[in-house]
Length: 281
Image (cartoon, rainbow, N blue to C red):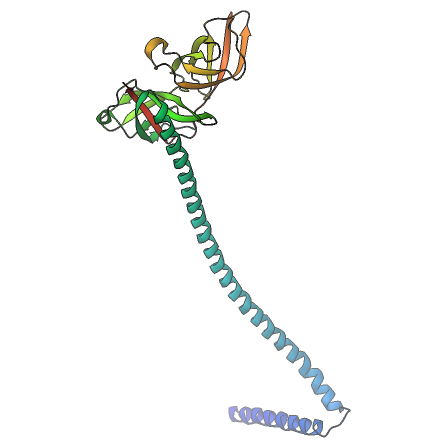
């Protein structure tokens, strides 16, 4: 039975082949009109050809898409790498610019200051946005002692560099020290207004602001008045720049004039500082 099926299959294939040869021969005779058989065969073959052709195009498109995905992935990796390199390069440029400004102001300050100071870098800070308490990489081995003022060179006007007050040394070790800044709530500093020489006291707060009062409730105060340390109480030496008054108010029941001060130091961004260890002879 299996042999019969085998021969039958061969006979079918042979018959179809003969029919196709006959059709090809008839078509080659240059006729302009097709026969009924040709038309029927064409109707059968055309959809099949179309189906397999669409499959072929789909497979080709899929392969091409997969290839494009591979290329996109590779391009994305290259772009990500370039972006990281550019960010790192930008960070280095920013660091160079900041360092250049720092060194320029330091050189200018050294020319005109009456103080002797040690340069130090910030090595750590307490949690939070503000540099209210932080550590530096210098200590007693560098001549630093508890209570020494900590400053930074600040340019307050064109070509005018001052010793901007940051705070003071609260603890010190051989090669490290802790700084308590003037915006810390445990800090207080006596001041005088440059314009009028009126004095008062300032203290820090949890929100990073500086608030204070004037000793004389009738003192003449205006927005923008600049403040220096007065040296009163011996906590800070006289003449360090603190900042400027941005708001003042007087309450009749308090009989004092309150002020709000904007520090000259950016207490969210401190990297290098100077510790005042003495005065020039």
